[in-house]
Length: 370
Image (tube, rainbow, N blue to C red; front, side, top):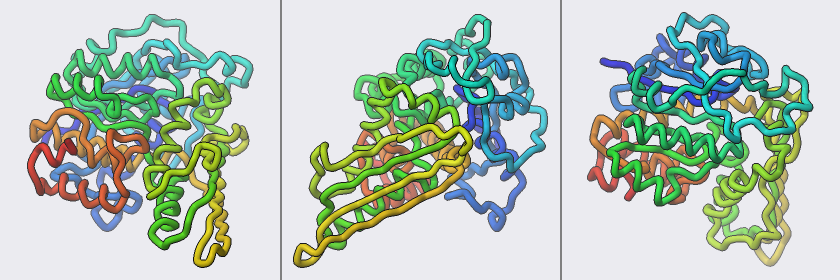
């Protein structure tokens, strides 16, 4: 079987965890594939995925082999697969555009981006030259212009897209139609972690509704020490991120909360936390007879590995869509794997729809989620 040929845009912590994971699970049996939602997606296992192109803008990564660049500063993801074989992939210089916030210059080099002094490559041409089939977008939060640049490069090169960032591509009708017209599938937007703050908050919100408890107000505050949290100190970059996370929780409620009663979004950068993310969730409501109900939860996870397995599943679903000639946003796949899909679903329903997609139960139109 020919491998799924992946391109990575952004060689940060999420790419680090993904590349480690592909090697970690390469020769694993079903019994030892702990941490993956699906050992196989159709005929494809993690061993059937190969990175063929990589793009970044940091001088410590550009021009270096991928297996070295994923461990370069400012990456701080947990190392669980220290030995990586030669990839044959050299990280290429991408366009900077809005990918590097100005305030990063004031932070130490081991915490912040340092742009390389190099000319960016033609991304579409590089994708074609390396035979990429699926591009996974791991660019920083708030890099609106940069994400759109890579999305357009996918259209120009005939490459499918998994958009892990809260820049609305799959959930934007114009972009969705552009990918559909080119015969290309895409999944987006804004990756849900395997067991992260958003998926936990969604489940709790649905639990309140299913048990007849009125949710009056809620918040979610997060801290972490990776470059994602450092980037988000620039609040102007957070509009789409906050919208994505808030809508993801609101979508699980039978009655939406007014804006003053729900606060969801990054809280602060704590450098010593590294890639450890800590989420604080509070929910207040009323049960039978108006009795007060209060819930508080603290969740601590390694942020980047928490998303890597979800990305592996999403990319394999995109490959199935390519094999089957399905184009445009994959509705069920996006609803299950992303915070801001074209159409929100309850997670239990999205999971069943993804299983139907994987096992090809239903028409191509239904499987695509149109």
